[in-house]
Length: 300
Image (cartoon, rainbow, N blue to C red; front, side):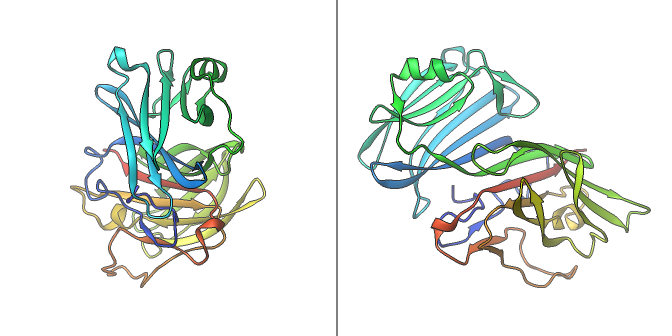
C-alpha cells in the first residue's frame, strides 16, 4: 500500500510504483481495489489485487493499518494451480482472526486481470461478512456460514494498469455501488506530432480535452459524472520525454474528493520534478472520496 496514490491518512502517498520507470514489456497487468473496513472498532484497509501473467491470473488479499498504511497481514493466491482455485485462509490482524474465502473454479476472465463473473472472494470476521466480491453471493454465504456485517467495507480506491497504442480503455465506478462506466483515454495528434491532444471520454461522450499537450503534460481539470464533481489529474511527461527505448507510463487520477490537491511546481518542459508525484489531503482522512488511478502504458 505504500505506493498506492490515494489520500489514506494525512500524509501524501507516491503516485508511481516501482514499475513506473520500466518499459511496458516489464509492466504487470494488474488491478488493485482498496476498501475501508472496521475490525472490532479499528479502521483498516482491505486490498484486493488481481494480476495476470503468462501462467494465468493471480490474487492477493492484504490487510493494512488505516492510519499508518503499514501491512498487517497478506495472503497470495495462485489460482492457475488447480488446487488453489477454491479454498480459504485464516489471517490475523489487531489480534483478530480474519477468514478469507475464494472460489474461482468457474470464473470468467476478459482481457484484464479481474474476473467478470462466476466467482466470489469473501472476507469474514467474527462470522460476519465484511467484504464480498463477485456474483456468487449465495454460494459465498453458504460456504462461510457468515451473516451480513452491520457495517460492510466501503470501496474507496482502485489502481489499474492499462495498455494501448493511442487508446486506453477501462471500466470505472466512481462511488461505492455506483454505475459502471466505460472510460477511454486517447492521446493522438490532430495535425502533427507537435500538436498532441488528450481526450477523455465517459460512455463514448467527450468530457475533457487538452490541446498542446507537450506544454501541458501535467495538470488537472474537473468533470461531471453522475452528478459528481470529479477532479482529473494527469501526468504524461514520460510519454513525451521518456525516450523511445523505455518511455515509461503516464498516470491519471480521477478523484471524487473535493478536499484533495495535487502539489505541483513548474509546468515547463525542462522541469526536473520527479515522476513520482504526491497527492495531499488538506483536511482529515475522514473526508475521503473515491480515487481511481490509471497507469497507462504505450504498447509497441
